[in-house]
Length: 323
Image (cartoon, rainbow, N blue to C red; front, side):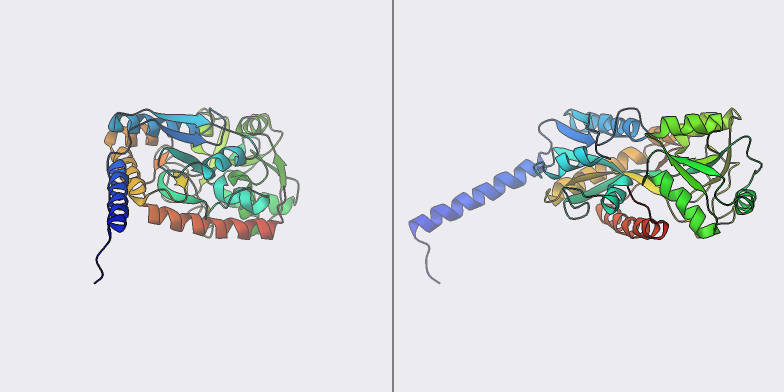
């Protein structure tokens, strides 16, 4: 074998030292503040969960983990900022189900799948179907029968065209063979306000947004997406129990990193998040608010993203949803 000359030996030593430094930096991770970008405004259902996770990670790491809200453009602005960030483990995206819905409805300057590396899920983002108390239906089957007797007369609200609660209602229409009118709003707040006021008759919402109104008797909850029943609303049947077992839509909240982030950092962060969600303190706190912790590996999260994009593409195509 030909011997290395002096220059080649210097190059080899330099490369090995650089590799050792790179590996050491990953093992010592993190050694400076970590940023979690939320592409949504403060105060929504994702924000408190993101801040809880960041706070616990900060305690574990001994480094600040801060949540930065960068809303706008149907979550595109904040998401694009993370896609273009350095893949060094110091910038993450706090994503929700819209991450795989938005690209199906409009142009995005990033690829939702290729430009991101899944890290971990935080929670299921299940939807509860709620009715105004004046609606003469107390079960999903009674609602379907009412909608069939009055095609196009019932109105359902959403927090915006193409959002998860919009697609959930469209999926009910598809599966049940009914027609209802969609009324989009700029956020969950005004959508719920008009639902309470009777301007619209029904809507899907995350439990934390409506659980107080349900318990106060101001809204009727007739079904919840996913399995099993919600511990915070044990009296409300699942969509399968209510008669629509084909209804498989279930949202999520999770953490993504820019593509190319070292796997050692991704695996380390994922494992830390799993420990946080598994703790009795956090589990009890989330469940009391109608939030279900969802622990997954990066690989399981990647499979979920792929499956959801296929499901939402089918709903959007069949319902002819356009922004």
